[in-house]
Amino acid sequence: MNKVQQAAPVAVVTGGSRGIGRAVAVALAKQGWNVCFSYVANAAAAQETTASVIAAGGRALAVKADVASPEDIRRLFAAAFQEFGRIDALVNNAGIVGEPRSILDADDAHLTAVFRTNVLGSFFCVSEAARLMSTQRGGHGGTIVNMSSAAARHGGMPNEAHYAASKGAIDSFTFALAKELAPHGIRVNAVRPGLINTEIHEAHGGQDLVNRIGPTVPIGRAGTAEEVAEVVAFLCGSLSSYVHGTLVDVTGGR
Ligand code: NAP
Image (tube, rainbow, N blue to C red; front, side):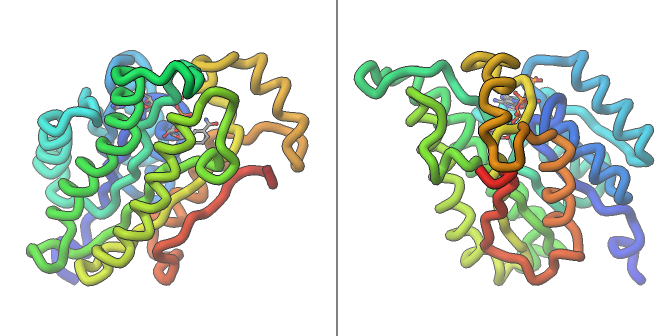
């Protein structure tokens, strides 16, 4: 076994300070991964994630880095590589809903903010990660999990075409990457959560909305961040070695 095979695998999780990203960081740490995660504003929440990752048995590195900024993303991956010496997985999780807005009132700044974060941010992160993991560039391969949404196929909540369409782009991105990155030793999949009980819903009704829609889900409730994280961790690891170019719905049947 060489040095790379012996060391614990390392994941970069964007938006790991809260919600699904935090649950992914902890789930990976429980499975023996070290985790570098990004956040954009909430340093206290990032500290809590760091403590949870360490408690779960992993090493943690929190980096304040906006996925919408290519410079921040370069800094994020440089910091991860400097700290851990390798990158084995990217979980492209950071995302925003944006304020609900009818298409009749479409606004350049609003659309740009959502698409820069949800779509361009994912492109920037994959570009950096793929350069480090590519077997054609001296890397040892790896996995990418993109965070899409069931909204990509059902159109999302009222007045959120911007969000649904940004996640539709993530689905297409995943299919294209699976073809492009397989020769580089990189497996790519996406997870499409349904209604998951996190703070993202503050954008459109918060806990009231979750409480109202939860019972209409076929399984009878909203999902938890941990229920999504287990699937993401499976897709990051070797147990999913022949799963590639796939969208995995985690929706309670919705
Ligand atoms: P959340 O609870 O609002 O957490 C969002 C996380 O992303 C936070 O850690 C936040 O950092 C970070 N973040 C936001 N904008 C960022 C940026 N520009 N750069 C870096 N980090 C940023 O959201 P969530 O519900 O866990 O959602 C995570 C992902 O799952 C998103 O892509 C979302 O679209 C997707 N998803 C969620 C649901 C759901 O029902 N919850 C359903 C389908 C898909 P700070 O703490 O610093 O703010």
